[in-house]
Every structure is written in C-alpha cells, then in structure tokens.
Length: 254
Image (cartoon, rainbow, N blue to C red; front, side, top):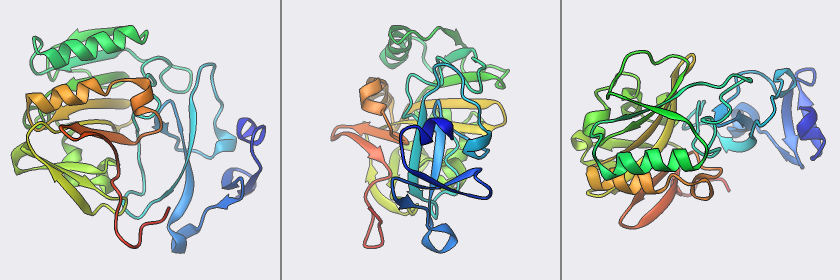
C-alpha cells in the first residue's frame, strides 16, 4: 500500500486495508462487477494491500478488471521472468521444466529462454512427483498435458482456472474466450497457449502448450518479457500473438 501511494492518488475501504480507487478509477462492487486486484511476481495476492509486505525484486502489478467471468485469476504470465526469479513472499522456489518430448525444438527453446533470462531450472521427467513449492513449466501438446491432474482445471473454463481459453475436441481446437468467459474465436492446427495456473497452495504451473507440436512451438516462441508483459495469458499461432481475453460483445467495458 505504501509503494502504491508513493506514486498514485489512492482511496481505500475496509479500514484502509483494501484499495477502492487508483488515479480516480474506482471499483464498482457487486453491481458494477469491476474492481482492483493486484499481483506480486505474477501471483494474485490473497490479502489486502496493507497486509502484504514486499521483498526486494518483487514485481507488483495492479489490475482493474471485470470479475463476472473469473472471480479470481490466481496466476498470470505478465510478470515474466517472475515468479521464476524471486518466487513469492521472499521465498524463491526451484524451477522445473517438464517436457512430453525432451528432444523437441519447443522444449529446447523453453530451456534456452529461461536460461537466457537468468532462471536456473532443472529438467525432470514429464509428470514427475513433488509439485508443491516448485514452479513447474509443462511443455506439451494439450492432449498430453491434460493428463497431469494439476493442469486439467483448464478444461473447466476461466471461473475455475483464471485462464480465458480452453481446449476442445480432444485438444485439437483452442477456444479463445472474452472477459465474460464466452467463446470469442476458435483456433485449430498450429495454435499455442502460454498460461499460468496456481492449482493449489504452494503450487505454480506454467503451461507452454498447443493443439499440436507446431502450436507448442509457437507458444514457446512467445516466452519473452516484452511479449508477455502485463498479459493474463497469450495465444499464438499462424495469425500471430494475441493477449487473452479476446474482445467481447456490446456489454464489454473498456
């Protein structure tokens, strides 16, 4: 809260613990369905800003968004290369790359990108045990990745996963959703997705996935700070890179 107030005009609620407005943009509560949320190192905070103590190197992002499609967005990719570098609440977590095909170009690219951004990552077998207090990077087509119980929540839509995309037709199609969680556009062969999940306490999983190997490669190519900055998740494919959620209909708020 002190860091925010040092740079912006802020009003609060609930005894000063939660942010109501920043720079004159105010939360609208239950009826307006829009409020301020914040992330530290790409992980949505579970306490009010006045209760969160920052650590050196933390990346803080404030997000004004509608929450009718997803009450919570537990993790985003928009702080990359966090949380790989500084973890959460001053605790750094080991980083583990799990590739369905360790010899694939996408797997090699992900490891190279992480290494180039100063991230020390180990390589484990696909679906290795021990998922708590580890930041996992799963590199696989969705038809393989979804077999991992910790990421299957993506199939349930943004209200469960916080990700405005889901796969259909056994992973052969990627459905991009608007901020209300409604279908916006569907991509087929060559479509990829980079998304972050926090399926449980002390569990963080990044997905570099797609409808096929070409899609996984397209997703891996987006693993750059300037490409992912401030994004919830990104889709990639023959048409380029798109941040999610996609634009919606008439009731969409700017």
